[in-house]
Structure formats: C-alpha cells, structure tokens
Amino acid sequence: MTDRTAHWQTVYTTKTETEVSWHQDEPATSLRLIREAGAGPSSRIIDVGGGASRLVDALLTAGYGALTVLDISEAALAAARARLGAPAATVGWIAADVRRWRPQASYDVWHDRAAFHFLTDAVDREAYVARLRSAVVPGGAVIIGTFALDGPEKCSGLPVVRYDAQSLAGTLGTGFVLQDNCTEAHRTPWGSVQKFQFCRFQAC
Ligand SMILES: C[S@@+](CC[C@H](N)C(=O)[O-])C[C@H]1O[C@@H](n2cnc3c(N)ncnc32)[C@H](O)[C@@H]1O
Image (cartoon, rainbow, N blue to C red):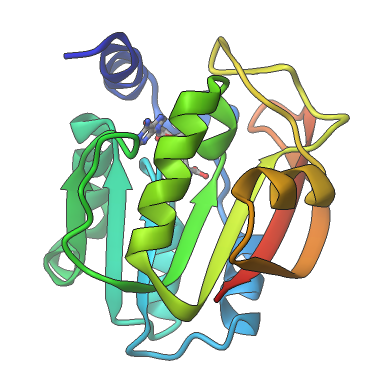
C-alpha cells in the first residue's frame, strides 16, 4: 500500500461523511455540467476520485445508467456501495490509483471533483492526462473541479495545486477544448467556504 492509499484509507475509515470538508448533499454543479455536456441515459460516465460522493446516487436518480466510480480508497467505495444498497450492483467500482490505472473501457464523460488537484508533481499530472486521453472517446466530455486560485492551499492535510480555467486547460494540453467554466463557493459541513474552479472540456 502506498502512502497515498494509506492516507485515504485512514480518512474513509475514521471519518463520517459530514466530517470531511468536501462533502456535498447535492452535487449541483457537477450534475449541471454533466447534463450540459449532452450526456444521456446510456452515456458511459466515470467519476474519478469519486470517493464516497453522492454524485453517483444523484446520477442514478436522474436516469444515468452506465456509471463507474474509481477511487484509490476501497473504504470510500465500500461506503458508497453500502449507502446505495441494491442499485450499487448496476455501477462499476474500480479501486485504483488513477496514476497507475490501466483503463479497460472507454467513457463518454470523465468527471473529477477534487482529485486532480492533489497531483503536485508534474510526472503524476502527466500520468493522469495520459489515462484521460486513452479513456475518453473523441467528442467526449471532461469535467474537472479543483480548488480555485483563491481556494485553500491544502485539502485533507495534503498540498494541492490551485487552478483557473486557463491554467487547467494549459495543464491538460492539446486535444481538450474548453467549453464552459465556472467557480463555486463550496460550503463545508461546518460552514466555511472553499472556492472551487470547474471546467468542462470536449475531447477531440
Ligand atoms: C477531496 S476527495 C473528493 C471526493 C469526491 N470527488 C467528492 O467530490 O466528494 C478526493 C478523492 O480523491 C481520491 N484520490 C486521491 N488521490 C487519488 C488517486 N491518485 N487515484 C484515485 N483516487 C484518488 C481520494 O480517495 C478521495 O476520495
């Protein structure tokens, strides 16, 4: 087990849902961006670094039926599966470090809220983008949410890279056309505000 895996396993085995800063009851921005990407009921959607997020619940409720959640923490995925109950059987669950993952399928939508920003090393970012390029179909959507330039410098005690739309587009490089971007003031379960930057790209 790597240090990173151990970190996230500890988080998800020692904290409840509302004890983590990133918790959202309703992932409204993610849902909107997925809808505006033109995703339909059969679109293959992957939530990378999805953790125990309620996005998968909301997507199932909205009628999206080809969902995958990938996370470095088995415990996070187990928590999401337990919460969902029977519908969890319709979801693909991948316990993997995205930096080393070998995609076995193609996706129409790649969603990542607050996982990419932990990659502070250029080699790790390149590994992530290589997987993104191989996993998303041409014309597919890439939705990434990170801390904004005026967001926190750390998340879960780990340093992050903060982005605006321009710097995120530059980091992904060629082959991703920026379609939309917005900032969001996320309110943590204990009431503080964290500024996020969301971007939606089209892969070409
Ligand atoms: C801040 S949490 C956000 C969780 C979820 N996306 C949400 O919005 O609620 C970051 C998530 O990324 C996962 N993660 C961190 N590094 C990862 C990596 N290298 N590969 C896969 N998942 C990773 C963590 O386990 C954690 O669930």
